[in-house]
Image (tube, helix red, strand yellow):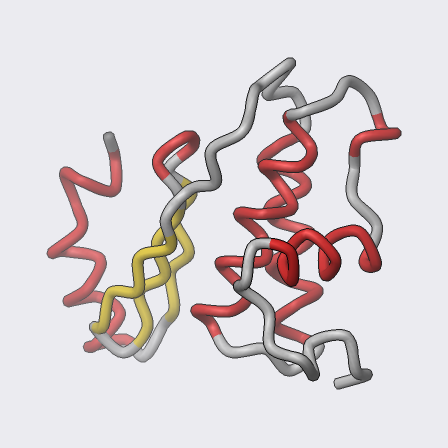
Length: 119
C-alpha cells in the first residue's frame, strides 16, 4: 500500500536526491526506483506454507546480488525468486542456496548462461 500511494513521490525523490529505493510488495513482487526510473519485478507463483522470513531472505538476496555485480532489475528478480523459494517451506532449511537459486532461475528460463559465474 505504501508504494502505490507514494510511488510518484519516491520516483521524484530518487531523481532529485540520486537515491535508490527498493520496495517489497509482498505477494505482488517488488519495485526498484533508481534515478527516477521505476523497475517492477513480478512475483513468482508458489504455494505458500509460511511467509516468515521472506522479507529477510529478499533483503539478503538483493544485497548479495547487487554487490556481486548484478543490475537492479536482475537483483530484484533474484531476490523475488529467493523469497518465493523461502515461503514454500518452513524454517531455515527452505532458505535457498546460491546453487538452488540459480538452478531455479535457469529452470524458469530467467537466468543467463553466465549467471552462475563469479562476478
